[in-house]
Image (tube, rainbow, N blue to C red):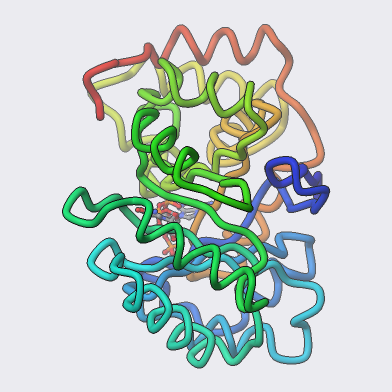
Length: 274
Ligand SMILES: NC(=O)c1ccc[n+]([C@@H]2O[C@H](COP(=O)([O-])OP(=O)(O)OC[C@H]3O[C@@H](n4cnc5c(N)ncnc54)[C@H](OP(=O)(O)O)[C@@H]3O)[C@@H](O)[C@H]2O)c1
């Protein structure tokens, strides 16, 4: 498993992690993923999966990087502190590695939220601060609200079919040492299944062609396309051991520039997709 630096923290994280939204796979897929080096797990207080993550990492805590999120409904100062305490309890850990604001909430001043996020770092309950679903303007406002610590990651929708971040967010994050955590990187599994895009036969033809050239699966090619950017990691979700192993196999090799170019052209960017 290839690793990448998280922001400019000096901490390395795998380029393929394990997402657990709507996850019902129990501990086994997560443990197999961790064994293969996919030792970043992404959950959230609203997913209802923090408990199973806690169970999966029991005895392995030191090897796993745990990312969770505070709901956009809990961004008042004291609510953030309470939400973090509750997540720590459900995860049965002492410290969250990456605590992310799940989505922005314009009803709460970002300074108030970030003050609470920084307090959590001061109290050693959180290592690093991230955001999710923040536009470039929202990210900049959040950065301006930080007093002591950087924002190290923005978790956003990114896959071959949903490329809006390429317009401004991705280049900004690349230039400023912020990791993009690509969510829904398989487009909810559709990119891993040949029959799922009758509306885009050219795209699926290109994906299949590159899968044949590389000897990889469609899903592995789609994930490798995401992580080809030096500051992007991807967090596919699977309930199944076999697919988790397959997704981990998206790392350790690289699409050639010509293969990336073919995919870029076959799946044209749609700027209105956000
Ligand atoms: N921050 C946010 O707002 C936000 C929003 C959405 C998602 N996320 C994060 O991103 C993670 C992943 O996103 P996602 O769950 O939306 O979508 P995804 O990872 O693109 O796709 C998951 C779907 O693909 C299937 N799948 C996984 N690997 C496969 C493979 N190798 N071959 C065929 N099918 C495969 C899974 O089915 P099986 O489980 O049956 O294998 C599941 O139905 C989430 O779990 C969550 O951690 C964050």
